Amino acid sequence: MKFCFPQETAPGETRVAVTPASAKRLVKLGLEVAVECGAGGASGYADGDYEAAGAHVMADRGELFRTADALVRVRHTPAGELDLLREGAVHVSFLDPFNEKELLARMAARKLSVISMEMIPRTTRAQKMDALTSQANLGGYVAVMLGANRLKKVLPMMSTAAGTLLAGKVFIIGVGVAGLQAIATARRLGARVEAFDTRPVTAEQVRSLGAKFVEIDLGGETGQTDQGYAKDLTPEQLARQREGMKALCAGSDLVVTTAQVFGRPAPRLLTADMVAAMKPGSVIVDMAVETGGNVEGSVAGETVEVGGATIVGERNLPGRVAHHASQVYAMNICGLLEEFWDKETKKLNLNPDDEIIAGCLLAADGQVRDARFR
Image (cartoon, rainbow, N blue to C red; front, side):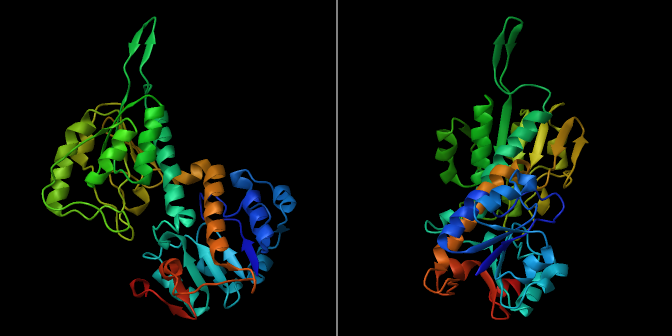
């Protein structure tokens, strides 16, 4: 099989799905690897390094698509390029399936076998393939760095001959993968860190990183799903959460919101009155801005001033550290291909009875397999 890795064309996308190191690993496994000329440029990977790893570097994008037995990328292929792929090819990428049902139907009509990296199950066996986790981890780091860069003060306490500078106060809302990395990064920078999550089980994780876990009585049932995500809150619980967080936000220098619900708009956590209550010079980073935003007034792709606060709505935070984001995503891809590569037949074994394939193979044999996406 020929595995082809094109250059990403989505606006602002700087990552790539293969690195020279991952290409070498796949070639050693017995795969034929082709990389579009310049595909790794925005991530700091040169064409010559891919060639040295045993990959073919192809300048003709159309030929790359037409000759691909499997097309592997970060973002999904635009509808205008789908016809370049031969029927029966494998397509691997982030797909955003809840919002791209029409595109998925077109992929199925071309008899593509479509693997969605978002739908990799969160199991021990699938950890090496879990691209959502690897990218969220880097996103949490970038969020704090962007926020710190916007502040008009330093985060660590400093004792100088001219006096003592007090440590900045950071509040992290949501303690998933991104939130935990945001906590760790803010602590490394010397900030005083508080964090809140609706899942009580995260309290010990917060404390283990040297931060304070904030307890807010939401009333009723809270917790997490079997996949580890926070359960949806009722409108009444959300209102109690906002009331409990208002004073914390008002006293913070930097607030990072990380709450997202896969397949649905992000919950609104910070309302306009909460933003207005924040002190002049404070900064909010809304990590959920691409799915509707946690913060009222945040704008996707922009940094805006609301009252005395600055709201950062940067898209694609992992893409800000594209070299390492590509490195870990490429290893997620390696983990997937290695797990299902049949060395005897020299093909991918996409057995729908396998629990991982059952979760992430959204289309095959001309059909959309998952009823949620039809």
